[in-house]
Length: 275
Image (cartoon, rainbow, N blue to C red; front, side, top):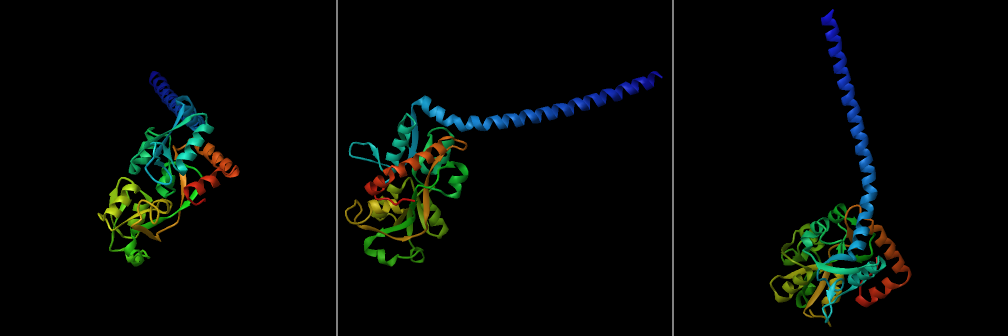
């Protein structure tokens, strides 16, 4: 009889333990779901709060005329620089511009070195999957830049197959060079790519159309160069960290600046094309 009672007690203890384990698992899952549900709103407000606490919006850029470049006083100007500064003011803070390695822009953003990437950034699949991006605000393309004396020979992508290009590392220009099977050398930014093309170190460069319009041809610093074939069509956007509430605030800012004519004024000033 004692054995039967002992066995019965053992079974009941096992059942109790299993029930307790089952209850704990369900409770844990509920806690995890609650944590996930509450984490999303917190993440969505963290960036704007942090920016306001710091009193500044740190903007990741490269030297890229007409989007971000320095005037004779050493101040950052350009379509993007002017817009970023105005956006920061709309948040009640100032804009601080930091030059980043374009190939590491996602790491810079995720690591907190900058609050956004605002530098004529093409909305590629890599960018949109890694960042919270605004709606497009400008149209662009990647173009071939060569010496003007031979420009008529390179009016198509096929004609450029034997050339070696300078491209900004990690850029849409590099992406197009790879897509077309071109030979290329990676450099730190598009300004350097133009220098390489002008010096003859490379046969040409692949850069943004908006930059080519501003820096290549008659009346520019690179009168000996010309841009020829467009390799694609693309759009620019601003990138924030995933889950950032600053993305929607920036979309609202763009809409307001379209409505009040600011974007029209800056496109005319810097010779860029609206999206």
